Length: 356
Image 1 (spheres, rainbow, N blue to C red):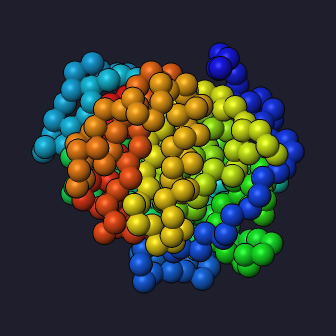
Image 2 (cartoon, rainbow, N blue to C red):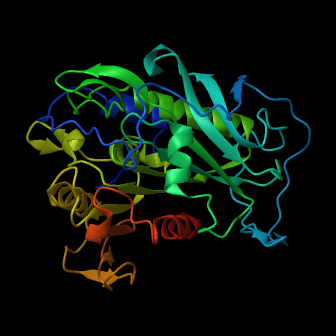
């Protein structure tokens, strides 16, 4: 069902045509109970930088095959594939920083994302790059602590960089003015290609200015951000190794009329959804996302699954068999409603990403 990888801009151009599918109810969940934002706000403590297209080169890129540990912080020791930014001095300060880039007219021009890189970043070591997409009316520096990918729940490694993109506030027909994502050509009223172009612009910026392993780029997201994680896993599949969408809507963005689209690439997908999701009030969106990826990856079937022993029951999370790429699903406990399963999400997600 898959052809060999093609240049991502050609794949994107081929896929982004037409519009169809019935819109679902608007996803207006704010990501965390009791917290919301009415505009593209950021915390006052977050500095801002305007990205330059290039950074000066200071060293020749080198790699090592030996895992290293300093103050209990570990690197994988995998030299990875070197991006053009290897050997260059990083253009942005360490820690959390808001970066501005120009995504061009097709990506809605100047756009922002929250960047978190280690203080001891080594420009000679190819790094994993992890995207985290926020839900409705949230921005990158709000979703970062909620997802907890860099929290104490996750053993730290020095060869990882995290980016958390900001959505734009837009008028969605029938939904109102919301901070949310455009989900490709089949997602009316959230149809549009601009956020896919924006995502690629972030990828290009990071690979040009930082030492990134292009074969180890990952994505997660919650709620509307989970929708976006699913969408980039398909439309930008050749550029993402693995994906963990959480609490996403039903995959109407993959419906071209009565036909399901075919996704390029072979992104591993681990879908998570709540047994008692109180935003959708139904398990159907999660089950439909699961079934899409089971079909897309040619898995043996829903009953051919191995329990992962996470959560409240051994089979709360499973890995399916016979798939062309790793395909997993969690139907997590009712106590989490529409939120992430906080007892294992961050550690399990990062362990999954680090397995590649």
